[in-house]
Length: 298
Image (cartoon, rainbow, N blue to C red; front, side, top):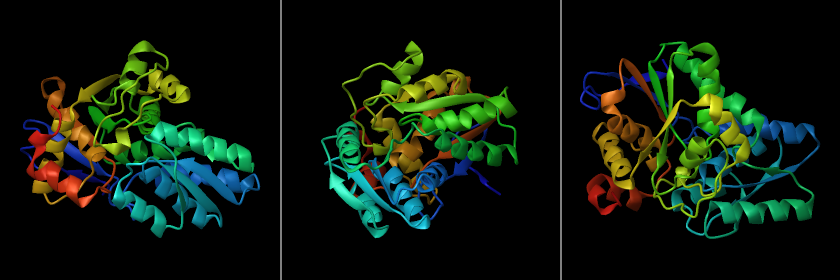
């Protein structure tokens, strides 16, 4: 079984199921996209790959690189999660602090890769990632045909991969992306039909803290998603607490789908699947979300 029933009081009147991507050894879904993408670099003759990440993507890249006999250089923002940095180091990644946020770290990583003649693995821009994430949809459909699937949105690749597969195999399923209101660039880009600029990337859900949209992801979402929902950091923190009450420790981005389901409750029907993306969160931040959600912006 890949799906887990959520407690009945989470979304009364709905059959709410969790797709647990947090139970992988890395604690997040990113390995599904990193493994095939890094394999392509190895087949091209590279022994090292460069990327930028707030944590989970970098960990998956280092994990995949080790399995393919390669090394990984990961550029991280200044305020990256301590828990995720520890995970990265444990996987043998070479860490470089490259800027104030993810997009500045990405720019520094691209320049480093160019100077060293190395491939830069841009999270969300590799077609192999989309195919890998499509496997999540396949696993869901092996057990149930959902009326709706809610997916947390950072750079949009996860929603694109799941949504494209659902669109081909279960076209009646609503594909809903959930973004943090403090980092709305993908929702704004989806609404506009093209990548737009945003000056904001302010959310404790670091897996969703994207400021610059990736055009290929925006293009894919035009057919891979049906709608976007925005939730506040307070709503996300409250959802982290709901998971905690059920004995599950999840990071902010993983709780965002539940926050989105609660926001859209009156518009959801039937079987609803939430993608639980990861569990890698600093202790202090998790405790604050669980014990004092009102301290987050609402």
